[in-house]
Length: 71
Image 1 (cartoon, one colour):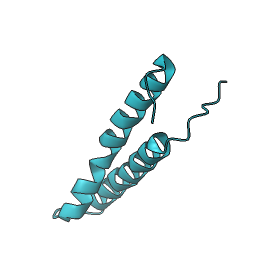
Image 2 (cartoon, one colour):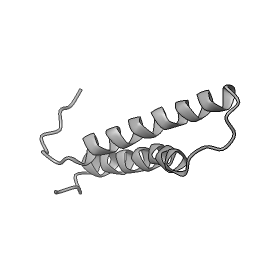
Image 3 (cartoon, rainbow, N blue to C red):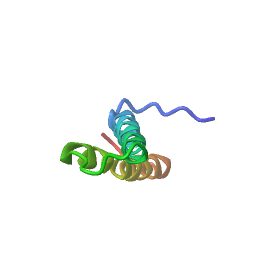
Image 4 (cartoon, one colour):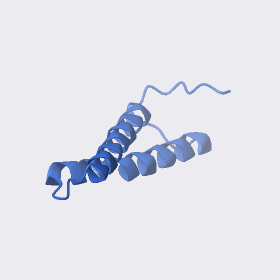
């Protein structure tokens, strides 16, 4: 498996964003299963971090693989 030598923080940040968003989605499903209907706005916004992290991570990996990413 190739190792990236770039010291960019883009990929770790996108992984963290995806993880926080995934946790928020799990919490939303858990709250829905227990009968909570009025979810807080911050929780819904936190769930949107999952696709944001996924998109930034995929774009970063593609650009690194092509060699066009130079932080």
